[in-house]
Amino acid sequence: MTTIEFVNKIKEAGWKFLREGSKHSIYFKDKKTFSVPRKDKIKKGIIWQWERLNKQVDEERKSKSESAEGSVCNKDS
Image 1 (cartoon, rainbow, N blue to C red):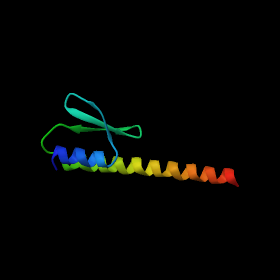
Image 2: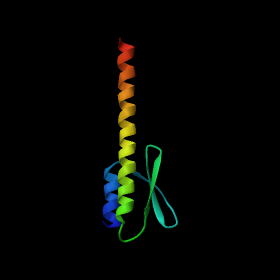
Image 3: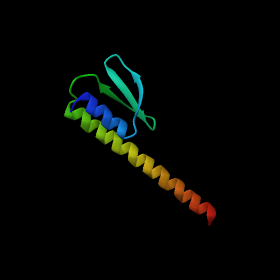
Image 4: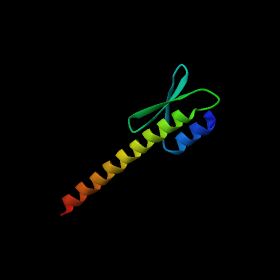
């Protein structure tokens, strides 16, 4: 996968650009950061690492929203 394709995939998943490092671009989502090397091709290991982190962030976001909904329901009772 090219770097441009990978960055577009990250942005579609809701990650925002934070800053440029010396050899990496840094993106963030929900207090988590991920660095993308500025090379022509992104290795599979980096893609897998990001997919794992993105899944973790999405699960945390989902569990927070479910717990918030539960607390709202308890207040109404």
